[in-house]
Length: 360
Figure 1 (cartoon, rainbow, N blue to C red):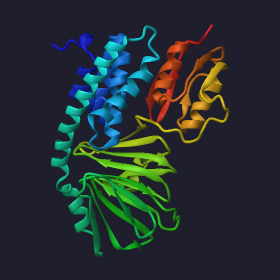
Figure 2: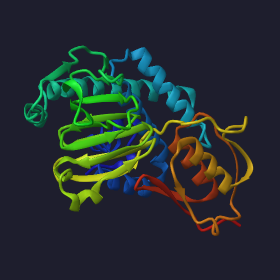
Figure 3: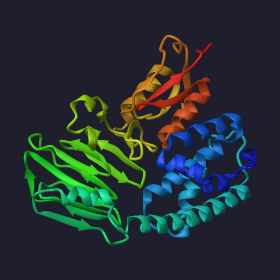
Figure 4: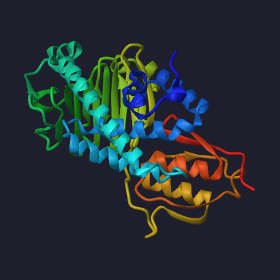
């Protein structure tokens, strides 16, 4: 029997099911950890720290030195500690930093070896797609340990991750389309060309854009598409020629992501685990809210992050916020706001839905 009430930071970091939820956004794992958080509310801060540490490591995709990793851990733990009413002692915090750094370093080495083994050879479906293209193809493989910048013939730029590969036609624009086939992970910064849409085919999913920037990441079981700018549509490749299933196509905007399960061909829309600021706040005070009505607070977050926030304005009419926020991640800001006004929230279909019984 696992005693989650006894879990510390290291336990969460090394828990395979917890990592499955955070890194791969697994639904079943997410439901489980949401339930654990409800059962043990005193673990919420620790879970939040572990989550941000895992996401920070996962987004680097590089081998950090122990000193660099400890600095990242220190930054996250320090920013999260500000939310705790009774702060940890310096000695206790340093112990956590050492534990977290060691755990992440061990986990990182293990994941790196596993990831390398999985990506040394292209995915079978990638080879199948490329072999069926009737025109001469050019393939680029990143055999280095760093991201590789690839300039496509149309001016688009691809940041190709280690052990990943792309193929595209030597005559890049054909049939009024620009098409790229991907195995692994890559970030695309696409040159705008409305007459010749840009398509990325990866592990059963097709991503279609005109001009934008987005990340496509494939694993054995999932394909993730994360939008940084512009608009992107995603559709299961099996539905391309089936007009009856075109309603399964999803439109993504910045900070939204789609996750495609290759096992059951399910496509879902969510929010990036670490949304970025799309614009700066209009006022110099930024995220400092001094007795601001909640509708202005939510409006600021919506505008800065581009993420819709749905709530009952009538019920929350008397809610106001008096809090100073700064560089916290988007979801940390939401946690603080929700706890302050006694509300809760959930993420559904690429938007945040806030629930509240109102404020006196």
